[in-house]
Image (cartoon, rainbow, N blue to C red; front, side, top):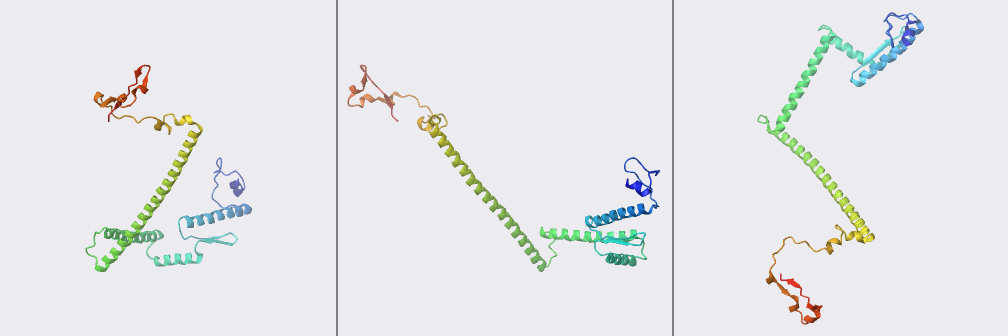
Length: 252
């Protein structure tokens, strides 16, 4: 294990099962000390880089090895960061510790944020027509221009969405019409290939052959009927087996 090589043995009293712990003290073995320095230095540089990227922090790292070799990292400039540090120390050399400096900085930042919040709230009230009594004519004209530009952008976006929806519905209509034509063609082809299908209920010829349904039955009235035989000039041509064929017709 790496920790064993750093200590030069495995007899550490703090060693545990798995990844063990090492006692933080100077490594006597020169080779092990150099290997550990390289590993820890690379890890420290990596952490400094990640801190600067993830947290958008200004980071400067300076490391001197036991042989006096310099290793450094800075996401901005080591010299610039050092100058900034010197300025911060000199400006507050007589005011307090680093904790007090940080507290003062955070107070200034919070004051700026509160001022921004108040400004945004006032702007929103003005856009809603509130707190405009104390505004000058120039400020009112500027506010009117902002509202008109906002309305123009809103209407433009609304029309864009409506046109997009209309275009989609038109394309959908064309697709449905094409699908309907394809289905009609398939039905007609099936009826041509199987004529018996058209005579079945639901076929295209079935409705033509069947009489229209009567929605309301009418009472029988003998006065509305007369014998067809009375209208025929030659009644004997319509007799069968010595009996005239009498067909009743209804007067509508």
